[in-house]
Length: 411
Image (cartoon, rainbow, N blue to C red; front, side):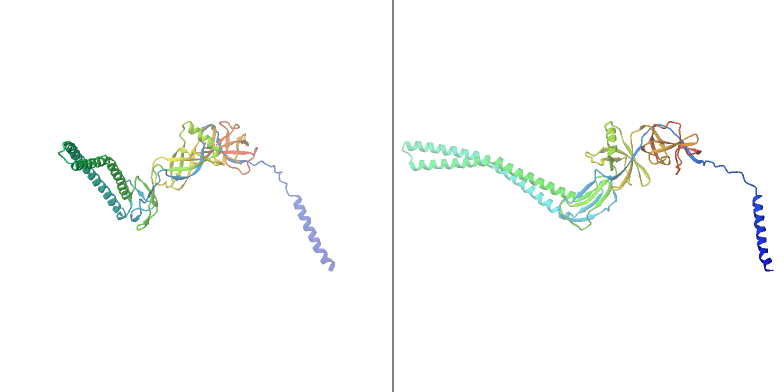
């Protein structure tokens, strides 16, 4: 009985395993699977070769060659400040003024010196006229004294006049000669005294002009339409002579100072030497602004050469000191090809499609082509017009990879 209980499960297990093996052996076999090469879909660009000018990306700072600084013309106190930093101003607008009481006394003092010297000159001219008149009188008196002496000497020889009287006549003649000589000396010295007074008068006029100029400059007005760059003082401040008060710059004529890299320096200088007008663009506050290369710096260093790009017209979005990214258009390069950035691999290769497969081609990157969207300019002897260039960036791109063109991209 116990043997039957043990053998019965074993028999059932053996029958189950045998049935499973029979069913597995009778299962139909599928046909063998053949391996297929994967195909990658991509877009292509038809190569067009033509002369095109790449752009050179530069970063510069906005400057103004006409930045104007107003300084205090003398020691004084700030009376009024009528503008704030960044405020636009118009020509002739009053910006600030110093207290006039600090300058008007100097003007009056200088004017008084001028009037005093003018009166002294008039007095000298009157004195000279009087000296001339007295000179004529004293010449007559000298003639009378000489005649008296001659008459008295004749009378003395005839014993009609005493020697003492003759000596008195000689003394009168000598005194008259001294008086006449003094008058002649005073007349001769007139020109020197007059020249001295006139020199002092010229100096006094200069002092008056300087005092009046300082008084005028104590009221600072805008010489042009522009913006207040910096305000250095506030109302009530005490300032010294030459201390900066305010600086401003015109709204037009602004420049961007940007360094031209050393590798491109000779190219840019050669174009300038040929008289070419180099243009650049920049995006400022969502607006595309145009610039032209006005001049280059007189000295360079190992990094390159500074160029000064002048803005075309006035623009309120350009402010001194702000950074601007310029796109300088270089000279057209023959045999250039414009492609999207996605077409470039490793910075030196592109792939063209030949008979449904990729083929690597080495290229030279010339730079970026201006416009939107930005594109690269390439050059390669291995590409010709009409070639299909892959513009879809594949992570596993390699020569011989099988591809399928889905849609030609626009050139």
